[in-house]
Length: 280
Image 1 (tube, rainbow, N blue to C red):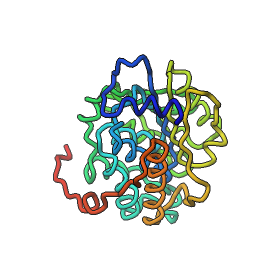
Image 2 (cartoon, rainbow, N blue to C red):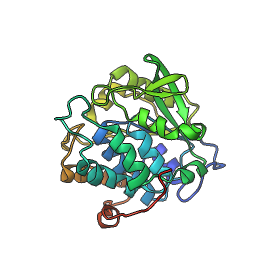
Image 3 (cartoon, rainbow, N blue to C red):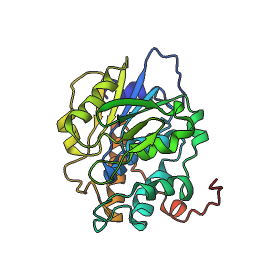
Image 4 (tube, one colour):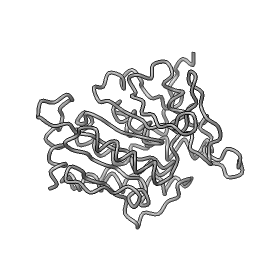
């Protein structure tokens, strides 16, 4: 078993900060609807009692809401957003060519239909850093505990992918956007995580091309990589394809950590969720 996996497993059912002499990070990649693969891996980590094992989580794009639901212990709920709510609400619509992936729909779901429990996220000792493009050409990492009342605006910016989600999100005197899919931006995302004084880093990719653009060899890194046999589009709308990819990535994750059982999606519980909450 790889040393990184051993060190993470040693923190099973423990909460950071842990006095083990280690600083363990998790690096999540985005990829629009392929983010459900990352969510499958996070479901597996949650099932194995490793939700609170990470000191730092580095994210961008879909990785940001994925990480937030993960530390809130709602990974199954987040997965159901991908395979149930987003297809049903036509988050992706190629006939809406000026706004193919409508982020306003996503935010509405995350706030009101399958709400992210932000209070629970902020109680977590794990720090989540998301990578943004600021004012067109600057890179800025923002930590989730420091977003304050602008959290939802930052989340909207993080998931506003170039080419499919128009415009930038104004926060204060600056405008923010997702970093997109350029190789240099993604590679710098991984490099930033590696250089953050970590002893161990678990990397979860959502697409094979991310691996090709980002692989940085190091003994302190372990990478979870989707199989080339798992076919899906970055803008996938087929529910069954989404669910299969989620389960496949989650099951691979459990196998790497020495568990033989597959993850199981809690579809009935979360597809029929009906919560009444304030919209103020």
